[in-house]
Image 1 (cartoon, rainbow, N blue to C red):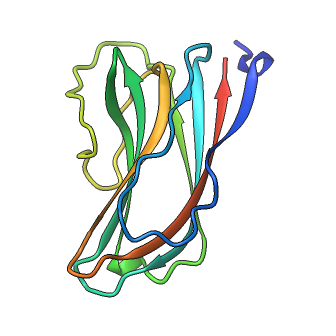
Image 2: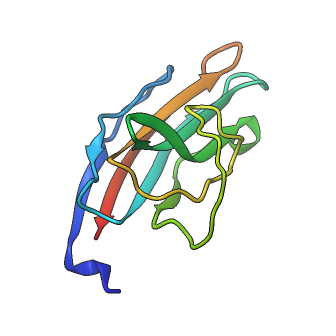
Length: 145
């Protein structure tokens, strides 16, 4: 199947500037599409302490519930970062049956779940550490269907 007949490129997160707290991006409606690719670009990462972490949760909404599709994790060993790109694909669901427990901002570090594309897509970030890390990022969303 050629999914490129219905393709849309959108800004999921404009360049953030430096952030020291978690945030949730606006959600983008994806109901008319079958697949999505999130192009996550981390442009700054400063970890003042050894216990600092920044997590990016790529999420899709399924039946009104936000579900983690992927976790992109950075910790003190990854710093300093001036550019890190990650591509995260969502859907379509592989053949077969899987039982997946939905998570919202708790998917283990650097893991992904095989989920279909839901009604919308967003990114939720979380920071941990004695002194808040500083990070900056931007993200593009390509919808295919």
